[in-house]
Amino acid sequence: MTRTPLADVACSIARATDLFGDAWTALIMRDVLTGVTRFDDLAHDLGISRKVLAARLSRLVEEGVLVRERYQERPPREHYRATPKGEELYPVLLALMAWGDRWYAGPAGPPARIRHLGCGRDTTPVTTCAHCGEPLTVGNTTQLPGPGGRTGPGTRVLGPLLTAREDRREDTPEAGRPATV
Image (tube, rainbow, N blue to C red; front, side, top):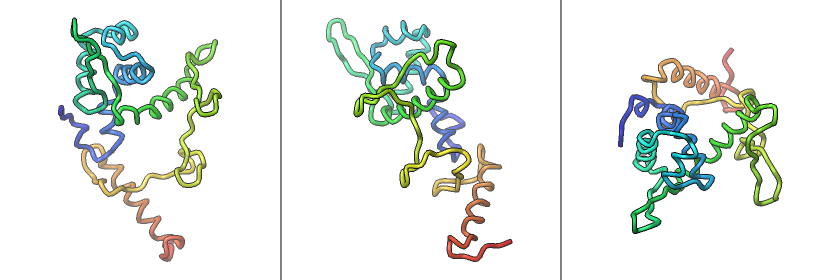
């Protein structure tokens, strides 16, 4: 696998955007998850150079996000399919789409809609708490250090900030310790 400077940062966002932060990669995944899976169709749809497309697809295959499958023997032709790891990027794409629809849709409105097959209604994605179902916002959440967290490149300021939050949280009466003033 190709190693980059972000691959060593103790931050899941840094590691994910190392692969997925490129606009072409996001658009390739949008197309594959929507059913555009053949190299020529991807190149045509996106207007991307074949060289750039080949490089992005190779990286996605190398990272286990896509698999290349033969669909025709003569002449040999292949297409790309999302792995379970790749399918888990769908909510990320939906969140980007919702944000883009809110802030960048043209006067005619959003360029695409999402229909939930379970209920048959058009919908928008909402990130919710896995425990209570309440929508998650920057105002009602906080980040705390995780077991893989460490201070280093990319987290020199963030690491100590999260640790301080954890220390303050442990000093609250809810945590069973007296609060410090």
